[in-house]
Image (cartoon, rainbow, N blue to C red; front, top):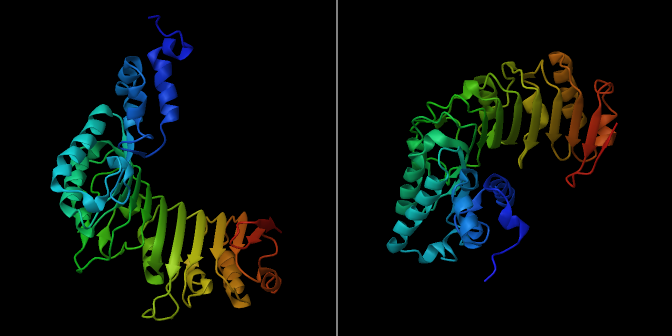
Length: 339
């Protein structure tokens, strides 16, 4: 038989590796049509090149809620006999990723706690190579986040549930490159201690006002902060001590409740602020006055305000403090116009 004359079969391995890197998406499933294993099924040459390309094995996801990474096996029907297969599959990925930094999403399972922990501990053996990590795990797993994580830059922590005790967990004790953190719905600021002073980008998905203020105080190097703030009926609505931050980009999303943006802004002193986004339905004139007062008090180099509110034009015209600042406003459909 004649050998294949397809031009792609004559590509040098370095170029073919680059093509493979473009084909494989971020956070690939461990198996299935979107995984690097597909490339190795074309021919022996492709198999050899794919195995020798660590970067296509360095970004993956393990999700017990998805069937894809175990070829259609439902998490509810998995047995203890599936455990070795899962561990072997993960180990193969880690082996083929070589010394490359690894990025992954790990979504553990309460119903498959033992297997979830085994897989998590296997990943911890390679924590020195962690780069971009998303963890949706039982709260008890977080206490194991120790050791050398010298390559870690981004961490998303989303515990399954709120902590059941008042115990405090100190995690990530050696991650000098970590600057970006996302705190999930069930993250309790008082329960989990991160190296706050080195973080520059933080997103808090669900924080009480008092938690948001405390976060601003302890994360002293913040450049970008996104806060989704909820109302706490136990909060005493008194004047807070002035809180200073050099954050440059601030987004405030007020979730359901009676909390007003003025209650957040009235305590802030932000002399470096350049961009401000506020989402609050049914904003009132006094809230805008608090916004203007914060800007005046901070004397910040603000370049843009984005208001995602209802009835904003009528209320916006009732304050003169904002008239010299570029303002973008719109509703939840993300269609914005500017003044």
